[in-house]
Picture 1 (cartoon, rainbow, N blue to C red):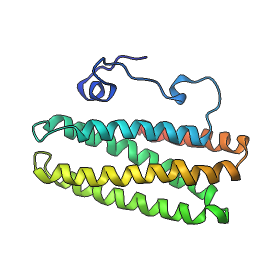
Picture 2: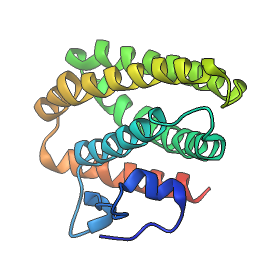
Picture 3: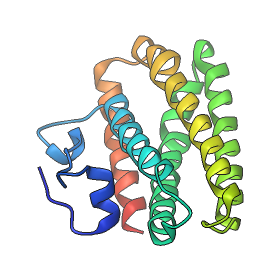
Length: 177
C-alpha cells in the first residue's frame, strides 16, 4: 500500500488515504492483456466515482481530476486501439464487438471534449460528466464480458501475455510522455 501525496489522489484512494496496487505495479511476472485492461478499468471506475461526487464548488478537484482521467483514457485507448483490438479483430467472431468498441471510444472522446469546453462550475458539467460515465461503464461492461470471453477463446496464455507485454510497454511510453 502506498500513501498518496496530494488531494486528487487522496480523493481516489479513499478516506484512509491508501491506494491498492494493480497487478502491474505489484510486478512478479508477466501480466496478460486482459489483466492489464481490467486493472485500467478499475482505476478509471474509481476516478469516475470520485469525480461524480464533486460539486460545482470543487473547481480545482474537477479540473485536476478531469485532466488525469483524460490522460488515463488516452493511454488506455491507445493500447487498445493500437495493439489489442487489431489482434482481436483478425478473428471473425470478435470483429463486430471490436468495431463497436472503436465507436464507443469516439463517443466518449466527443463527450470529453464537450466537458472540457464546459466550465466546471456550470450546472451542465455534472450532466455531461454523468453521460460520459454511463457510456464508459457500458463500454467496460461489454469489454469485460463478451470481448474478453472472445479473447480468452481465441488467444492462448502465451499470446495474451505477449499482447500484455506490448501493451505495458506502450502504456509506459504513453504515461511518460
